[in-house]
Length: 231
Image (cartoon, rainbow, N blue to C red; front, side, top):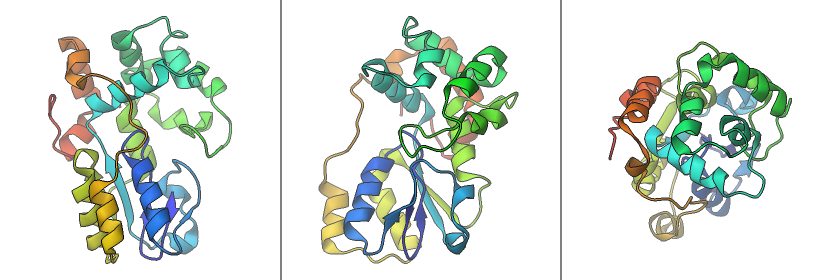
C-alpha cells in the first residue's frame, strides 16, 4: 500500500504492483509505503477519502505466474506447499486445488493454521483469518484476492489491466489529477519490468477442463475486466 497526497495504490499479488510501487516511491515526493499487499479496508482513516488505484491481470495468466514463481523457490510459501502436496503435484492438479479452495474444507483448515496469524508485510501477507470469506464463496483464489484487496467497487476505485500497465498507469494518474514529470513518464514507458516469473505462454499450460474451471470460478474478474483465454 503506497499513500500519496492524491491517491492510495493497492498492490494485488503478482499483478504488476512491484513496478508501480518502486515508481511511485521514486518519483512522487511524500509517497510512502504503509504495508505490503494490505487490503483497502486497512487504509488509515486520514487517507480513506482518497481515490484508490490498483491493477488486475488475466486470471489464467496469474495462476501460471504464481506456480512458476513458487515452484522454483528454495522455500515455497505455505499456500504452494499445501496446494501442491509439498511439490508432488504438477501445474494442473495444483491449480485445480487453488481454484477449488473455497469448497475444500480440509485444505482451508490446513492453510488457516499454516499461514501467519497477523500481517507480516512480506510475501503474500495473507493471515490465516483473512481466508474465512473464501469458504463456500465459489470464487477462484484470484477472484477472492481481488475482492479481498479492493472491496466493493466504487467511483473512488480505479483498476487498470496489468497487460497494458504502462499506458494504464499514466491514464489512472491523470484521472486522479496527479502531475507526471518527464522523468517519471520516461520511467513508466521504458523501464524494464520487475519481479517477472519465467514461463512459457500461459495458454500452453491448460487443458480444456482446467481452462473452463478458471472461467467459471474467476468469472467475476474475467467479466469485469473483459478478459478472454489466450489474450
